[in-house]
Amino acid sequence: MRTEGKIISFFSPLLLLVLWELLARVGVVDIRLFSCPSRIMKTFVPVLLSGELLYHSWVSVRRILLGFAAGAIPGMLLGLSMGLVPLVRAALEPMVAATFPIPKLAIMPLILLVFGLGESSKIFTIAIGVFYLVLINTMAGVLSIDPIYLDVAKNYGASRWNFYRTVALPGALPMIFAGFKLGMGTALLLIVAAELTAAWAGVGYWIWRAYDMFDIERMFTALVMMSVLGYLLSYLLDFIERQVIPWKTPPAQ
Amino acid sequence: MSEINDAIILQGISKVFPSRHGPPIVALEDINLTVKEGEFLCIVGPSGCGKSTLLRILAGLEQPTTGEAIVTIKEEGKPVNSMVFQEQSLFPWYTVRENIAYGLTMRGISPQECQRITDHYLKITGLGKFARAYPHQLSGGMKQRASVARAFANDPSILLLDEPFGSLDEQTRVLLQQELLKIWEGTQKTTMFITHSIDEALGLGDRVLVMTARPGRVKEVLDINLPRPRDLTIIRSQPSFLDLFHTIWFSLREEVLKARNEEMG
Ligand SMILES: Nc1ncnc2c1ncn2[C@@H]1O[C@H](COP(=O)(O)OP(=O)(O)OP(=O)(O)O)[C@@H](O)[C@H]1O
Ligand SMILES: [Mg+2]
View (tube, each protein chain N blue to C red):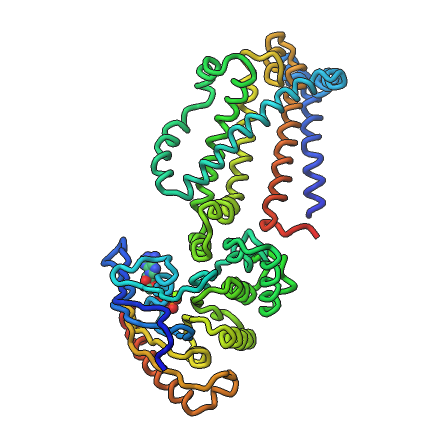
């Protein structure tokens, strides 16, 4: 059953690619719009080997990582405080509730005005998207901690700082990572939008340039790259999660 | 004889919990009690009569609605009290060792000292092989032993034990009771011990507090004049043990039936 599942998982995407290629060849799929795997590969290999695509990917990854850190760290700290201290929660929750639903794309013009056309506007766009998701998940994580652990910490003389360090943070970590993963998904979404305007490099820029030139294959090479990046980044998060939450899955032999 | 100081004075303690549906719940009503320094007090009473609430008030985790819980005992460099909770309360994110060392770490005891004390209690509770395991890898009884070890390792002036041996098998229970007796006889720590087992109360305690059905009041406090050091297996055949057992059994039976009738409506 298990090996069967693996074989199916391996061949099903392959089958789809073959189908795509065949349908494109017989003309059911419009090559001008959807291209086909063989053409995309023909474009992909040279831009990859020349380092051009890697350069643009790196620019985007850098923005994603910086933006992620700039959003996730304050989101986590604030989420912990809001979860642990009812007064902080009471003070900030209305503002979070009011500003969270505003689509981050809607404030991009404002961000450009405030942060200018440089790197910081892109980083901030991603940061703000990640911030809310991490904040909300962290707070929910702290609130879901069984109060008995707070009683233990209190009874055993934990200081204020130790309430954060030994109860709130470890107790909320699984939810914090859920927030990180959602945040990473949003970051990938926002990077393309952020690189639409006032950008001269990056995968998003690449896609919009290809669009301007109506170069469908070039566009697809970036899509392939984004899929690879998304996979790598989520793998990285999974890896860190396993290291940081050893009590969730027993440590490997 | 009355040279021994009071350790805990409970004055007119009552506790009322507001309830969303129906009238507020009176968990405790006018509890007056004094516990001497070094005394081992056992508490028995029907389920829901407020035993845990009383201990939580003493631990500072709950405020009494009226009255006062005064802890007069104060020892240099020792925490006032450590509680073994009725429910599973080991931190899932810490190993057994880290859990047992928790109180020591919070108090800033040096790592070497921490290690030494923790090793000792790991050994006593038979958890040495599981020092690096996480709670979810332990059996229910092992978790309870680790919680007990966490409280003992903290070396408080007052031990608050809420049914610490509740879900243990008979053999382990007796072993740990014996261990508790040994530690207690060695340190003479003021101890409050909730149990549902009269047997356990008589084997361990200096006095037994019998509580009434809710609202929990002091029904009676009985002295257990059995010689120490005690051997839990021998003690059961003593005539005074049997007398006390019967007294408490009937006293408790009355309250349990009352609590039952209450629940039935
Ligand atoms: N935080 C709370 N909020 C509302 N009611 C509570 C709360 N804690 C306890 N109670 C109520 O107070 C009463 C006493 O509870 P407590 O846990 O002290 O009983 P207990 O004697 O320890 O029972 P058991 O032997 O079953 O452990 C119960 O009726 C319970 O429902
Ligand atoms: Mg209880």
